[in-house]
Length: 171
Length: 283
Image: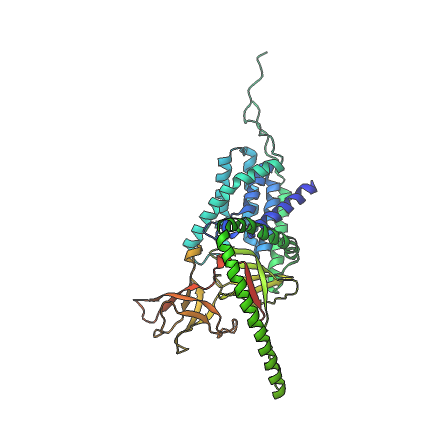
């Protein structure tokens, strides 16, 4: 089990390094890079559960904060919160629909941005909002290859049992 | 009828992770107050920076390849022109060395101490984080290069920013367009030094063509014109004087307040295309 958590940490480190050195020619408008770490946290939360989501959120926030020289507090709240919440949600809604996953990532990036807004308000609100929207959109688009990768790497749990089950045949 | 099993959530483990997160945050804040980096951050940076270096290098290959294919003929011509320029520069360097030796001999004969100039260390940009709030770059210095907090970062075109934090061979640079950045600037054409001086701040906005700086705290009679070069004045004791910041794009005089004059500046440096910079020591 420890190897799983260690592997997840390494994956978060690689994704954080990739996110923070995203090629300028791949950035939207030359400035907007996708939130790869947050996408990974969302996927781990949905596919694996709340504890794994919380761990990936913590590892991801730590790596992004350390490599990007950012304050940790807001990142921990946003990333771990997303991991735990989507972990709980993933146990009741089986995360199999790609469009639903993209929508979830889009919303998660928006929520993480709003949490960041509470911890450190931006100087120009309109500019921040536009930036956040583009970030969410870009991250949602990049969910497709990451989902494909996650399905290869992460063992996806079996779909949960239906709420009601038909009664057995009449005796 | 059978009820679905309730999700098995290990809240105690999640709470433990939460406590670890709080402890890490406190550790970071304490380290920040002492102007150092916390141990977990240092470990992650030591592991992550080589990865960033690899990603930055690899991500340039497709772009360079595509550019090479599209502009092959132009590149050959440019290459030829650069070869000629290089030969001229080499001749200039030889001449400069002669001047230097003459100058040194003259100083020695006059009994004056030799002049020391600050050498600029070239550094490679391995991370660029440009957002509406924070605009930072991570640069990697060569093996022989050293940087210190407060060092000036420039490009051939002009001022880029200054070093905020150094860790090993990498340094975090606060760019001029960071929301916390402020530089004492002056209009280089203005003859009256007092009238042409102001403070240069980022204007806000994040998209490449729209990124602008603004010079405020200007005198109402300031003689500013479109196209004027704005340089550092050196009055802030942070940046040395005469480093190009940008050119004035337009001058805004408030109709409500005659005292309020703002110059909108187009930065000399393209912050979205930073690849290599020079780091110059302050002391």
